[in-house]
Amino acid sequence: MTNLKLYEALNWASSFLKEHDREEFAGELLLRHYSGLSRTSMLMKMRDELDGEVWTEFQAAVKRHAEGEPIQYIIGSEEFYGRRFEVNEHVLIPRPETEELVHGTLQRLEKLFPESGPIDLVDVGTGSGAISVSLKLEKLELKVSAVDLSEDALDVARKNASQLGADIEFFHGDLLQPLILQGKKVDAVISNPPYIPVSDQEWLSDIVTKHEPHMALFAGKDGLDLYRRFMDELPLVLKEKALVGFEIGAGQGEAVRELLEKTFPHARVEVVFDINGKDRMVFAEMDS
Image (cartoon, rainbow, N blue to C red; front, side):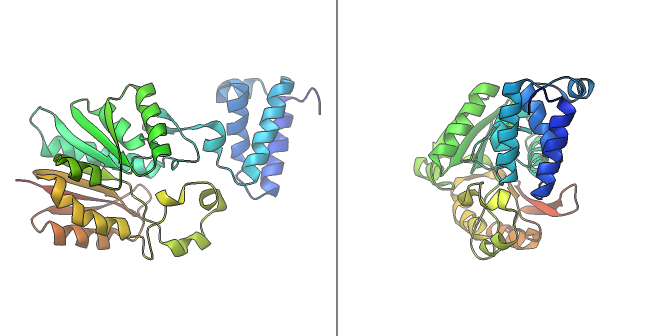
């Protein structure tokens, strides 16, 4: 196919993706990426001819997505909290729901620590660094550290922190172990840990199960394994006045609330619902 116009390329992509049970809108995202056009520019140039090299790259990308590769990995980035984060197959793709965890954390930090001064916060299982970088850039007085079990993920997070200008200390290790070993105490622990029950693999999209890192997705029979482990480790790193914020899977709110209330009997524990009406976050506030 030569001298293809933009609208013809887009029509081809829509049909091809539909045949493979993928979202047709993906074609537009990929075309904008490879042509370097904004949505407005693309709509104005629909009858312009598409550069041959761009058509080749675009065609290959559409086929990769049809086979199940997430668009964000093909493009190499995802938007999160108003910033662009690099992503690859070593990290989870940041989700809009997690933006609500960041927002909820910022609100509660303001309330719990109204006095100025540094607040030590750790993001556990940082992945792409979306949570830690966003929190640091939104609230500069935070002293942020981030932990991940995957060195490959830490490479991505370091790169994002560097590119976006966020000063973060990174640790390689399992949950809060790096802090425990150093005897480090913090004011806040925030985490979006793996929380999907292993059995859920059966009905999850192959875009997720075949491409995103399983160690960042699945957590035992009921999805609560990591939260249970947190209950052993949190008391060893938290200061008397502290905040804990977890992202959770829909339906896990009460179970995670109970774990936190048992571990911290005097804490204010709150299950928070996301924009879609699903229980998505649990916060615990300890006020000395």
